[in-house]
Image (cartoon, rainbow, N blue to C red; front, side, top):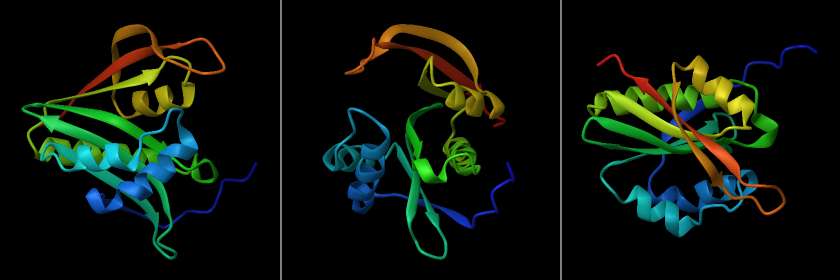
Length: 159
């Protein structure tokens, strides 16, 4: 299969005004999705970092990452890329941007949780330098399948 052509994607700050856009992307990727009110409440906090991946030519939002930094620790709370835009390196760019911003805010450790059966995400995080540090049984409830375990992953920054 030929490699897809490079895509001109911009990673931009997402704020409270982008809550509806974030919720729309999230809804297409996760169940249960976060609401625009949940995104807005989170992004109002001074600890939050919100990122959107947008196609430069069309301004179409195709990915998101929301996390936070508290003291010297950061956490990726949610990350997703629209289905038709996956496997193009967009999630990698979102993670790299978050790591850079979190480090600039003083984070020396970054944490996240990922479903144990989400192998593409686990591969992405491992490639970005995250390592497994914990396990939560039955953490992700699912309507049509048994609950999935969560893996806790962490990365030490180069601060």
